[in-house]
Amino acid sequence: MSARIIDGKGAAAALRAKVAVEVAGYRAATGRAPGLAVVLVGEDPASAVYVRSKGKATLEAGMLSFEHKLPAEISEGKLIDLINELNSDPAVDGILVQLPLPDHIDPNQVILAIDPDKDVDGFHPINAGRLAIGLTGFTPCTPLGCLKLLKAELGDLSGKNAVVIGRSNIVGKPMAMLLLAEHCTVTIAHSRTRDLPEVVRAADIVVAAVGRAGMVKGDWLKPGATVIDVGINRVAGEGGNSHLAGDVDFASASQIAGAITPVPGGVGPMTIACLIRNTLVSAARRDGFELPE
Ligand code: NDP
Image 1 (tube, rainbow, N blue to C red):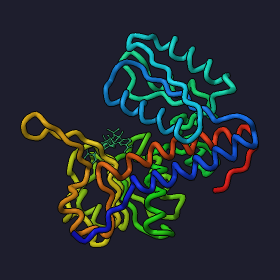
Image 2: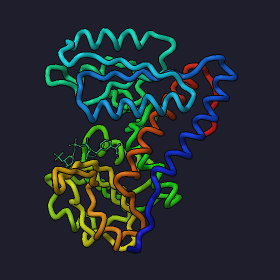
Image 3: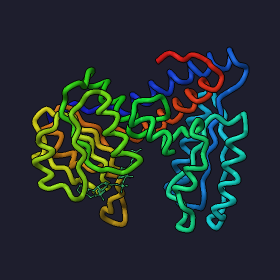
Image 4: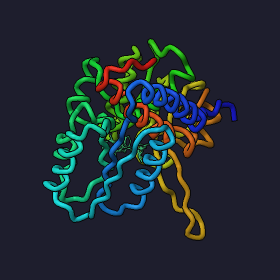
């Protein structure tokens, strides 16, 4: 193995510790704690795990966590009523609705109902637009975490060729926007891309956000490339066991890449750290409290 392993878990722990210090300063100055409301609809086990981790990280940073667990059969209207209450609750600085939602609820309507200035997930079209044209808003947490890892690894990203595989609204597209803002030359690849291995071979930076275990092989990579693996795929193993795997074939890619994130322990922990940081940023903006960058 030649690649450096990018320690997302360590970077996330450091960011969370920094946020905790900033929260203490914010509380001392304003007399209140930032609050994050997380809404979970239904009983999807993976979503329940994510919501628990988010609540725990929020409390550990010295912030308030408001968890709203709603039955799967709740109507879209009732869910939007709750969001409206949270929008006008002064104790709530951030609102997150855990996706996916049950089929009878349109996630776009729910996201549209969130006050863009409390949209710490950065999914509201106003925040997507702000990101696209370079205005201050909220950036989705997963691509923000990827960017922080890339900058820590590479420093200045200006002029680098970056290939983002995946064009979802929550990962691929905002990732591409962030890399463009850092002056990378950005290619967005997707399921209709022709000769993906050849496209990837031109990249100094590869971000894989596909949802296909082990798709990106070592021989697709330019030697020395920096590889960020966003994928979280549950793969069945022997005897009914299963394990998590990324979108990159770690064994072959780590022979060729210069640096690579593992799965688990790479991008995943950074997502939650960026969420609590976004919540603090929201509180600080609402109170006119200055945070260090
Ligand atoms: P989506 O399913 O919304 O998007 C997947 C993207 O991959 C689509 O743009 C799709 O193209 C593209 N794609 C699918 N198959 C191929 C292929 N064979 N070749 C090239 N591109 C392909 O997924 P998400 O963006 O929501 O998530 C991606 C992965 O990241 C998942 O594994 C998810 O679990 C993980 N994830 C991890 C997070 C974390 O915190 N670490 C957070 C969020 C997601 P097309 O548009 O043409 O269909």
